[in-house]
Image (cartoon, rainbow, N blue to C red; front, side, top):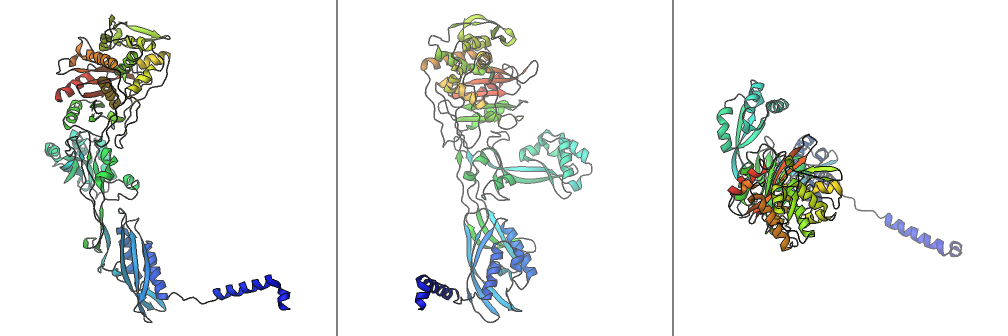
Length: 632
């Protein structure tokens, strides 16, 4: 009767209920309280909670101080996984907790692992860790805490194209001010500002000293020892000056390929934050340029050791463990030629304006020199974006030869003083005119009117197509360094096309792109500049031989023809060729102009640029002469 009353469903429910109750009501083995206490201590230690860990010890005050010192010394991102693995030597009032530890430490991908034991004692019905520094790490001595020491391997070199290191250890002297010893700040600042090598104004020095604590040395500049020797007598005995000697990795000269190569020094917060843990505070690292872009390869991997540090003064004592060994980086060979780079730097050394000189090898695309004047803000040689001026006529006549098969360097053309396009008048410099002359002479004299008239007879896209055929606007891989390859609109009409025919309008180039265009015209194939020996650029499709020969004839005439804009280079050995340029910019009346020369000799192409340098005959051309005189 019972089975009939409940039915099948009710009986199944009853069985399930009994089964669940039986499983749930079976008593489980409780975790021993001494193990619970040990686990609480270890979890707090690995989780960087010094106060919570200390509260599970029999001397919370001493434990909190030592644990905090260890965690701080291990680094703000250090974290551990510490787990009890068992209990031993158990009595009613004592026990030993065995544990395993695995720490993730900053600046290394290796984990620091070890095993240890914790002595546990029972006090007033509570289980606690019996405190000693060994509760942090088994071999940590009394009166000490853990500390990390990073061991960076020797930094690998950036080398020149011959494989010689470009950075070597160099003796330096840091010139600084001790605010506590300054008797007359205004007088001191004026005396220091009067020394050009210190590169500081009196106002900058005064501001820096006033902003610094009285106990902190205020650095003014770090000089190479030989430079410091030339100014020592002027600054050494000034009240408040301080001097610190040291060694830094530096290039051959203070201006050598600056700022392309960059510099090496103490890592900044920005670099640390963006390194994903690879770089930590105190590391020596690349700060700018190629040294920063290639830092991971040059720096290698730092080793990490764990030491016992004295609580009294933090001095490192016994090495407790090696977490990871330092791994050297690998050198990076650049395409820079030391002789050519020195010549480029020297050619710009007396230029007071922002200026740049870039040299490339047309046959390979290798960048041989990247020089910026001291007044340049950043690497204008590579990333500057400027109107090309008449150097762009190399592109204009590339378009003309490509679209007019019968046109040659000797074809007769008109060079009037002015030409009008859609109501806008364009003119030659100072409105010179030459009547009917060979095209090569019009190019050599830099007849704007001839170039404009020629461009207006071409298809609307001809200038853009010619520019891209010479490499303008191409994608370059320079090993993580930015560079501007130039830009030009695809299709323009009327006055805009007339302006672009003479490198004005919306045409923009960098000194590197202009050197590449010159090299492409000279060699007959667009070159892809390269800076790393391991990443050569791929040359584009060759130009027709007729076109290349015609361009070389025009560029040679710029130097060889009497009265030409670069005739001052005609007495130099070899077949020097190129094109000058004066590129207007800004809204001044009359407008200011940049000064350009782009050309080369043999398997060397280069561009000279002076921001606001005005006439190329007095600006860029003399620099080109100085440069070519110094190179083979």
